[in-house]
Image 1 (cartoon, rainbow, N blue to C red):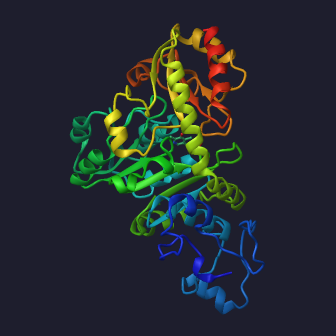
Image 2: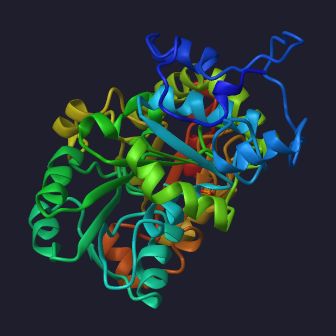
Image 3: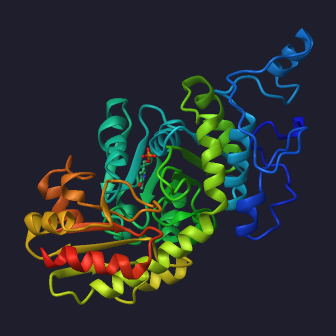
Length: 405
Ligand SMILES: *Cc1c(COP(=O)(O)O)cnc(C)c1O
């Protein structure tokens, strides 16, 4: 085992020059003395040292080997390195869940008296962190309509330290102008943190658009096969060193080595899966847009998307998700969902199996009816996550479901 591969640091890597598909298969691999083809799973909490002197040197940071799996582990290091090279980041840290990544990226650099600005339209738990949790620790937050650049601008205060957004947004698939919002953040002395789950690293690279930190729920497309939870924070080396390193070592939101191994295997097929799922989502969107029971459809890959020009500018392709509103409110949406045989009712997304969600009664039920209306989450709104099934089977299934609406 090479001792130079201890953690996900920004050493020049021989695989970094390859194209993303190649990096997804090869980046970060550490081969043990046995020369295994598939990455080894190091299910170990700790490490042993040949001498007390070596142990002392590790703890002093003078020897780069591993100390304890809350800090670092070879399987986790492989996953982190592969994510770092995929994203083109300097550095990064993995976490046990996507929410651990979001919470750590937001909380670790802040202190009481600081201020955060975030786009209203976001994953329910992210909204809890920004709206409910931060203020309890003396960190103020302002929620804005992410599409309105003036609102971002007006929300900046002298103590604003971070902007946070998701794009495309969950579940309404609006696309926010990452470069413009990054400029506003930087002019106000703040950093921009982007939750890139819906876009995936295949279709959008926020760091190249000006964002400072990118977070993922690896639970979604990165695993992509419904097996385990995980998260990732990607940033500069300085952000990791200054804000994440000690916070994460001492508070312990660490990824499990087993899950890191599953996610490494997920990464190998990420590009092919996301491409296939995006093609299917586009076909589903085209098939449903004119359906008499569908009152509204939103898909970032279509010309009728409200921010179609921006999609072309900042994303490489649309999305694996489609949003549509069924005429007749909750009852009609429920009849549609209950009428499906192939696409399954779930709150998850990015899976090999197509999944449908009714955000108003699940992921966004915590919000008041007014807050949901403001976000465009009507009672008839359904979020469809395209899986790897044949597009025609899914379209037939959705048509059968809509028959019952
Ligand atoms: C699922 C999700 C999260 C949270 O991820 P977990 O792995 O479930 O903790 C955060 N942001 C977005 C956009 C998500 O879809």
